Image (cartoon, rainbow, N blue to C red; front, side, top):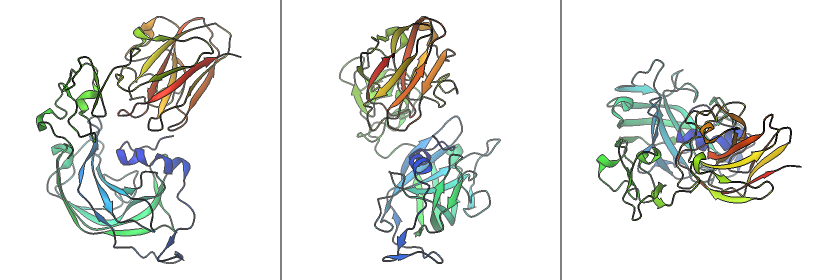
Amino acid sequence: MRIGRVSLAALLLVSAACGDDGGGIHVIDGGNVDSGPKVCSTALSLGTPDFSSENKTTGYISWGAPVVGTLTGGPALDMTIEFYPAMPASGIGPGAIDLASPENSNYDTCRVCILAFDQAGTHTYFQKSGTVTLTEDPLSTRHLKATVTNLVVEEVSIDQMSHSTPIPTGECATIPDKTFDEDRIPNAWTCPLTDWDSGGSCNCLCGNGMTMDPDCLTPANTVTNCSTAGQACFQDTCVAKPANDTCTSATPLTLGTAVNGTTVGADHNYDMGLETATCTGYAQKGGDVAYSITLAAGTAYTVSLTNTDPDWDGSISLVGPGTDAVCSAAITACVKGADDTEYDSETFSYTPTAAGTYYVIVDGYYQYEGGTFTLTVTSP
């Protein structure tokens, strides 16, 4: 399950949206149950800001900062300030932006959005009031030059459509004023700034293990800075590419025999067509690998992805029948798929109407992730 707005913060909030509605009683102020007007803590502040993420297609961009201090002794928080273009696309600022305006008062409509959240997704906070004063438009310049003043955030739940709802018994906090002056290159980047997302070669080993050159997401780009030719760049690390990176080099499967595999270092070959309702239901932007198997018509088969890496949200799709040509850049022959859980096993059953060679594509929802797994195809 996914929430609507595509951002780093939103993706981190999925577990809160799907597995925790944010309800229950929260204890604040030394053990007293919050039953009246909220008293906002002033113990929180922001650490060093950094570029977070962007989507060049939609125009979205965000920056983040760690939150110094905690609420109710809870987990550590991170905060993001996100910017979304209007429809039709237009810039934001310069000038003062009221975070309590009707447009910005909910996460599903805000163009300037501030979120605080813990990595587990158990607590989420959204702007209640405050002002963001922009020196320039961050959407067109990809540069955040702004001052946030009088910021108050309150605990919310966020549903699948990104609608935020304040939790009556939740906490709130005031954040001291903060001035940002950050471009879109992460602080961890150590190579020449012109190498970051240059549209050319993938420069690996430049992010101190904290970030990766976006050029590395394009399979055709040459990987540089690795000691061995032909290596891939995965999360700022030089790794060997999986041998079964495409359907052309697919690993043959034996019915009933489990195989271990990995998508670490795999190219991002297959995405379009796997998001259909008859397949996984979600876009698959991660690196992918392929397996082939011969299936009979009228026989029920079960495809299972197990023992998945806990830091990888994997998926499985069945494409065919036919030659490896069915695995085109825009797949039209996906007959079944599964991306029903997050960071856990996936399985589906399918009875072919036509015999032939089918391809199992192991992919992932998040483009920067990859992991190990066990794949099995069985039949009663």
